[in-house]
Image (cartoon, helix red, strand yellow):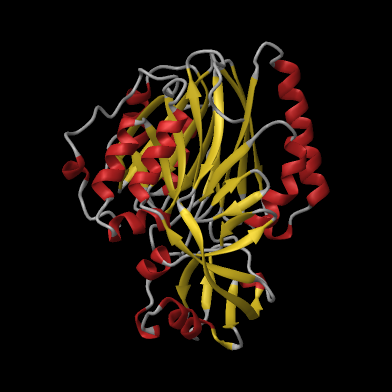
Length: 398
């Protein structure tokens, strides 16, 4: 992934951060009793919620079990990552923690299991009851948001986000799909010590601080289009494009050798689909042994895909982060950043620059296998939330 090491990015930033609204910290995967070490970074609390973004090189079950011991009175939400966003921007082999102080946040979380066979009505009912109860408990708090982490290999994020969105009402939702580096073997989420596959964790939150949920991407649709003529939607596999073998036709259209397609090609030549008046990425994960294209998100026969052209990743990110700071600089930002953006940064030699931007704007979070924003599961984006100390002052589009 990122070609520079953490120490190369900049002088080592303080791991613990108590100057914002959130409490943040991180420890290496090799740390003995990592949650004990992380707890000393986060401080005494009390916390309504702990979020953990856990490198796949750590023992995830052991980490979440230890966290349950340390934080029995807080909800602890965790997931595996495709890389971490920490004190120095892009990080690897870290366990990143975020504490939400109970004095300014009230939260409730639920584990949604067996999402490939989701009972839609029962899930909607559970979420609705949680939301109404939370609103009743927090009449003095003006801000609401929802955070969703999903098993990134479940192939079910699209259905899940579309199903639960109506139940959330005025709780804007963002989130990310759990990762496994670039291995694509096993991704996990957890709530309160229970680790699970084929599952998601949804957190509803109320806050006394101003918040802004956002999604950004730097891709511009081009002129080249292609039609999916044969697919296996249940496995997100495209077999044919324009009635030709998928991988070879894609390679031809982007001017690449079909035998040399790799993650860097997919990051630099993304494809998008038009939904309403906007384009959304349908990112390619890999070429399988049958020379078919495996996608990160929903795909179907008849879908028209357009090859997109990336804008400069660093310049675009800087402009978007500056926009979040136009009226007031955020005290903290949580970011769910697609693994393809991280790969693109490496390919374009911008890992250092991107890391410096993330550090300067206090972005913490993880690299994902896809992002959730509203009712959509998307790719090649960063979704997130900014937290502000002062009351609403204008300047941001809600």
